[in-house]
Each structure stands twice: as C-alpha cells, then as structure tokens.
Length: 261
Image (cartoon, rainbow, N blue to C red; front, side, top):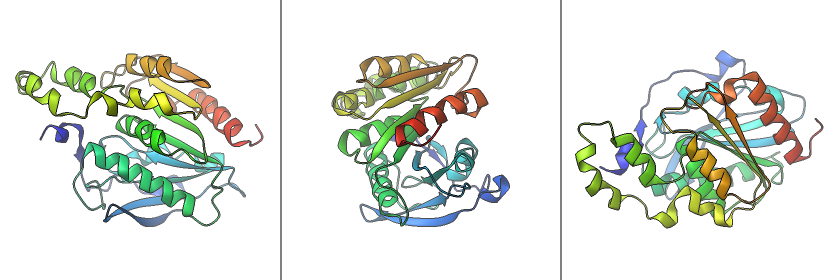
C-alpha cells in the first residue's frame, strides 16, 4: 500500500506516434518473467547518431509521456520508451524495486537491438524515471555516454514526506509509512557514489510536485562531469519542452556520443 503511493498507472491511450509523424514499432521484452511493452521510435534523420532509453514518470503509460520525447527522433536519436510492470500493456504489479529491474531489462533490450551502437547510448529519466535511472546506472552503465535526469527526487522518504504533508489522509500515517520505504542505501542520491557516467540534471523552478532542491542536492552529490540546468518558471517535467533547454540538452547529447554539433 505504501509503495502504491508512488504509482498511478492506467491503460488509457492518450497519444500515438503517428500524431507526431513518427515511425514506431511495438516491442516486448522480458523482465523477471514479466512481459513488458514499449515503443521503438527510430531516428527520422538518414542515420541515427545515438539511441536513448526513456524512463517515464509515475503516472499513466507511455502514450501519455510520448510528447516529452517526440523531439528526439527528428534530432537524430532513436528512442526506446517502455512501460514498467503494471503500466499500460506491461504485465505485473508496480513496485519500486521492480521499476529498477525493468529499467535494467530495457537497457539490455536496447543494447540487443539490431543496428544500435551499444557504445552510444543515452539514458533519459524523468521524475520517478530519473530516480530509477540513477539506481539502474549504479548497477549497469555499459555503453551509456550521458544520463539526463529530469525533475527527479533524491530520497524516497523526503519525497514521501513532502507529498504527505498537506494530505489529511496521509499525514497521520507518515510515521508508520516511512520505515516501510526502501532503505537509505537504495536512495537515488546514494546511487551517485558509484556512478561515473556524465550527468545532466534538469529541473523547473516552479515544480511543485518535486521541488528543484532535489536536483540541486543530486547535482552536488554527483561526480564530475556534471551539469545542472534550472528552467525559470517551469513546472514538473516542463523544462525540456522548451526549445532553449532542448537545444542545450541536444548539445550535451551530441558531444557525449561523439556526434557533430
């Protein structure tokens, strides 16, 4: 019940790749005996300069998060986006440990795709996906040249406390709930101790879902090379919808995978 506070999945079809003039392929892969569903969005340029694994946030499913990555294929990047267990068409029930296992399985699936350069990969995690991506990268980062961590939180107990503080139902349960969350050794900020992948942290200054102080703390704890981009006035996961922030992110991505500017 406590972990369910982090997940709001559904099976509604919000958007389709065709609406963004994107080619796509339905893909499935295994994660701990569960079949997960995703979309493969090939780069729309003549040749891909890299491939991106997208880890979405805690609500809905990939069709709701598609607009957040639709700018990448026209910029020359393949994208693999998928639903965690219990989201969209993926089997199973969501769990915090399960999302990390699913992210690792998706990274392995991306490496295994024909035509993908296994040494020119980018991980792009947003909100829960950013926190999950950090935990995954602490275990496996082979071939990943850059991780973009957008609107992520640093500690499970901190974000749970912030979410519950204004809730009449959740606030009284908080003292009982916090000890049931993953231990501090599993916090995203703890994962940074062993991550040696270049990191780009992005956050909007008007994010009231995950306050931008989380990204500031993550950035401070990370090893170099690292960069923090704060988007004035941007709300949750809005920063990279802005052309100027997209341009800066693409500059970092192209440099990381060794592509021309």
